[in-house]
Amino acid sequence: MEENKIMEGGVGSYGLFAFGLIRQLKPKTVLEVGLGEGAMAAKLIIKALLLNKTDGYEGKYFVIDKYPTQEGLDVLKTSENLATLIVGDSKTPGIYRDKLKAQADIVFIDGCHLFQ
Image 1 (cartoon, rainbow, N blue to C red):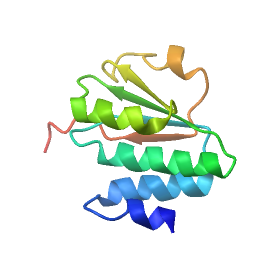
Image 2: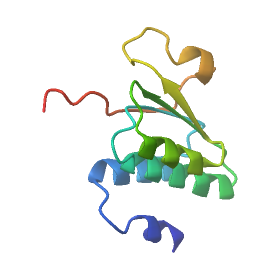
Image 3: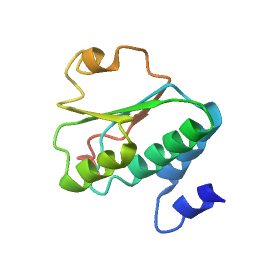
């Protein structure tokens, strides 16, 4: 099964949770705060949205990140135009409103980890 292939190789429970939730709920709009170093969750979010698209459910993925890494940018390029990067601080009021143009169906907040 195609879904099982993506789950091989070192992804955390957050990414798997996001993947399963998106596959189950078929959201039109997903917003994530924080792309992260390896963008592992982004890979799974994109994969879930692409699989949903093949099932007839179109979804968009918006990511807010103040300092996106090259690896993260490369991951977003695999989205077949489903992903939009919003570069900036998620604390800025309304940072996503101009791009999103709709209410997010699912929001994942995985931003600043300075407290760790």
